[in-house]
Length: 231
Image (cartoon, rainbow, N blue to C red):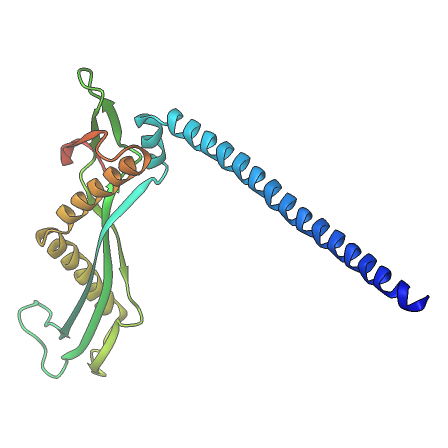
């Protein structure tokens, strides 16, 4: 009797294992199918949202986002000046230097210039005859900031004089001279032109990112420097 029952029990065990395997396989397939449906719904919904957002964009909406930046820094330049500053006491009539009163110091002054355009005063106008042409009016580019690098700036060597000691005013005067010199040389060297070119590229890239590239032709118009105050 025991010999006859063993095959029946073995067959019954195989049936149970087969049923469990089929159950788990069906569960996995169902989970995958459910995930695929959720992904499809999510993808379609996201596509509709993106499409709707793009459709509501307009040149003026993009321009308002440009103006939100307030100030567009589009060019920068580092500079360093090393120079010797000397000073002597003058006679009562300011005709000659008093002997043995000369002092001097070597000073290094480093900084960073940044230039850009003022977006707050910018304006946009869509061409009345061709809606794909945008006319953007900007103030002239200008020096946004001139920041000293105090880690590099300072006195390199000094020859003090007990009769005529080096004063803070001498150091301040040299720093002021360096600031004025750096800005003048930067303007003469084309920093403002570089800022103008880069600003136009950045604004154009914003429109190309918001719409199909090349959909709009942008003309940049600049106000006369004397007609507005950029700062």
